[in-house]
Image (cartoon, rainbow, N blue to C red; front, top):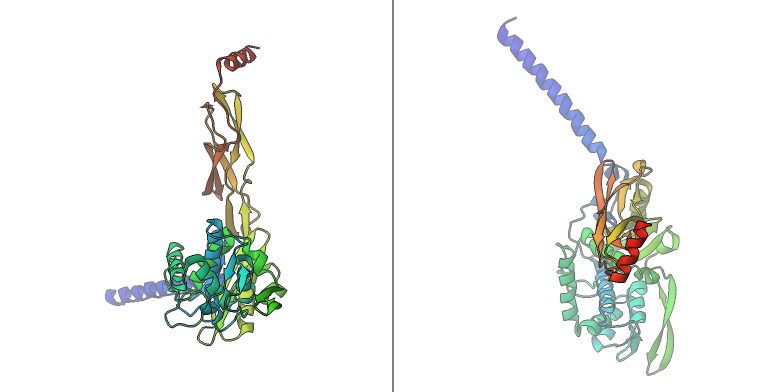
Length: 396
């Protein structure tokens, strides 16, 4: 056999081995993402997010732009709760219905011109019955006009990192320029439920009512939740549905089991049953495969420091914030380890809540978070009498 032929055979063999190795690697890559293998989602766009960390656990075209319909109202609700927190409005304030609000179509609670409802009841109508008229009334009450409120919505969207969202109205009635994505809906859902968990008091209501107060007198009007998941899915606690002929069926569904909070969003589903079942399917996947591993609780005493020249000689050190880590369930039995860093002594005066050290958490050898350690109480600088007393105690 000639040397050239021998070299050609060797090169062919090397090429074949490389091709086989490449095929094996590619095959392994295709099976590592179990979420995509196990979840078959028919809806054109979907995402599953863990609320505490914001980590995406599954997605399908999550950044694809779609019409959001009434899932828009998640942002409306977020700005209502923010306005209450900032003291701009209160839950007992009376909201007067304008002609514009009373003239809204689509899902509504049939508010009449000049009718008045409290901020709380207007918000309940939005959260439970997806009321377009209440959304407009609240926008005008908070910002003076719908246009000013929409600007607030878009500003908040930018602040939350919702890069593919443009709001045109407060309620989601169709407009070709009113768009968002499944991921952006998950972001604003996360902001609402983590900062204002009281929203679940409204979003878990199945049936309720308001009293219309009009020139004809008082009339009771029934409210039924548009989110069927809260009736049959274990742990479901929100959040918002949406439908127009252009958007088709949308849903941002939230659920909590134990310490794990999940947000599942679908957009553009062909049927109400599909959006419900696919949100449930994603939530099932999250609860089956993930868990929260926690560090020490806030306020736990983890050490003591000597205080120099203080009216007391020692001060307890407590944890300022908790650390929670999202992990796969197959390693959830492993614990977060911690290391405490504190000085031997500090100088008085010491203010309660003042940082005195840190606790550092590691999981499987890697740092996963840290918290300040703060003084559990204030320590005043000692006067001469106290100093002498402390010295005498040390001598004895």
